[in-house]
Length: 372
Image (cartoon, rainbow, N blue to C red; front, top):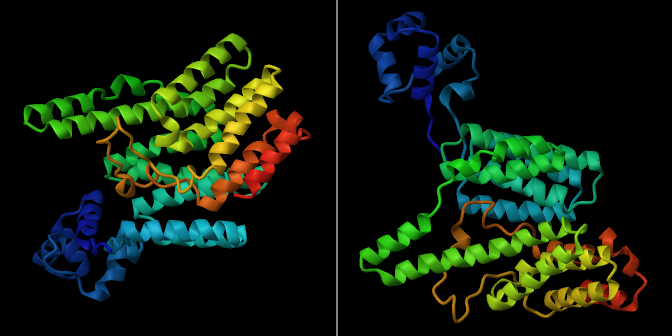
């Protein structure tokens, strides 16, 4: 927990009112030296002066003393897992009420606020069976937390992470133009080539292993990033069968070339599902069933769980600092039970696949997934 920040609050509020230390000392009936010591942290005002100080500045006593409770990162992770379980086992209203109380108590703990926002999106929006208006309220709460982090946090990395989450919130809320405005100029200022510069520095410092590790990590991330983008693009290719077929052909080649199914099995799940939907859009139900067989095989074949990042003969140096990455970038979006449930829903709740529901092959796949 952070210490009391009384000295900073007194100094900031005094200056905001254009008061000198003499002015404040005269109002409180103390010496200028006393005020000076308070503002430099050498001593604290007598407790009986706190209400008078707070009233004079027009703030609460908590605001006056700068009391900002913080949670350790380890405790935040434990709390996230605890609350994620409660979202799937307890009444939604009770869990949200507890979450809101936690947010109020730790409103200046930005790591905690970040993780609560991620929790709201992953569980409140994507996992729970709620009305659309209830989901929108949750997204609004998450957005408010991310906006506070962006405007108040001194942690540059954390503020950077909130950008994509703010964009996610705005997309869910239908604020498409806000997302465009947020990103349209970002590319002009995005730093590129940092990994190459770092690798070169390692080589020049006589550290070839570190240089290769840095570039392996870069290649690994790039491959997984491309695989992650493709499902969304597939959904945009329903109007062009030639383009769609070329895209999935190239993606399958990429998955095989880079051994993606073994490196990160979870990375190809959405690609398979999007490809099946694409085949249905282009009137090829048999091919859709074939790709859904691959989807089912991968999810039930023992590779997917636990969800991990793996190495192979090529990626022999790649590192996975996943346990220590900032919140949101490393946390699994949901617990394993919820992920398994979403894998089933990916088939049965996907409107593009509805014409397959009476097919025996489809029914068999749903049964296999439900037995996970």
